[in-house]
Image 1 (cartoon, helix red, strand yellow):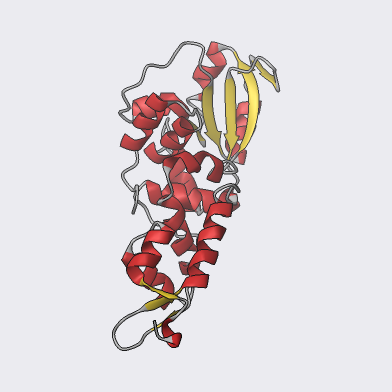
Image 2 (image 1 turned 30 degrees about the vertical axis):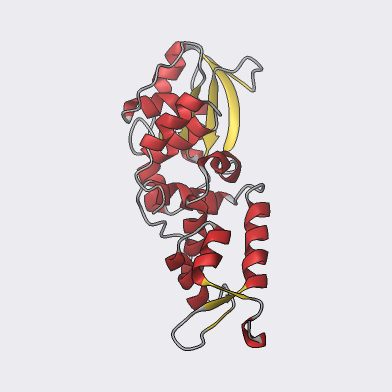
Length: 237
């Protein structure tokens, strides 16, 4: 190989090493996120840059995303554009959304704070009626069409804004921080997504399908994972 061509690889090889499409590699090159040369009409990508990016992606797969980025990934998986991230961040979000499903629980772990509680059944029923509070987890997945059976003793997941959380705190029949918790409240901070997205997240009795799917993946159960896949219309978007 000519000296000037050493240390480079064609787009197809770069795509294979990064686990993305050739189109995505060209997007990275055009955005100056991958060094490349263009002798004539051919694009040759810098091999060191490709391997550095591959190592960074592998290391990043073990680190949870910030809440802002986690919600952006979930919104994209739900088939919507996350308006609260920059164009450069959106490129990263698209990469994360294409990761193997087994990586998503770790990547999305910081999307909301978890607050355990034990609620009487009457309190749980009342919680479902509160504004800015929505059911997540397997119960939401079933409401969104998942073919699952939920055991009676499975914990109920509630997503809530700070205002919704204050309403939950006002309920009777609740023991907060109980070791024998039957409820997990996921507190969503408004600054981590847009106002419109927060409204969409909590406007109904149950959360959107992509959020329910993320909760199912947290269970690390094969049947739950299969149900999660069917709830992700934006997978690979």
